[in-house]
Length: 233
Image (tube, rainbow, N blue to C red):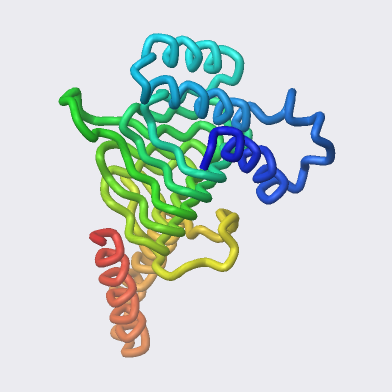
């Protein structure tokens, strides 16, 4: 696909991902992510043809204008949409495949100073929530989601959801709604609820020998073991 075709797709892709847009004129002032990708397309062509200093200068100016830092050596596929975009960082060896959605504050960073592939690979159709940090040469699988403010340091399988610090896979199977971050579970809340119920059960056991209470305790033990298994995935 040629440069102009890629840029045209980037512009038209906004209408598929943001219902707030009402006119083409809004591109100029309200979509820094689109303009960051626009300048990246040009700089990447120059970078691959060994005009690397010029490519870096272009992306430096783009960073000042959009507050989005994309290395011109990164690989970004078609119809990638950076929504709002402020504070997004994409490293040199990062690979982003087609139809990926990235929200503001996302970092695709490295954890090594050794030359080579040191940034993440984001597979087709993935959604990266606001503020998420994906670090190192790891892979986010196709159609997977990373919850807002999560820190991912291990591979995430395809069609999965990962949340937390560090992130754990808490759900497998593709969600019909790729934007449903409001449905992600609160692991900390669930753990605290378990602990409170556990304490209540133990208090009752201390007071009286009650078979029903003991059965509840065994049920909570099963919940706890399931929780631990999920955290180890």
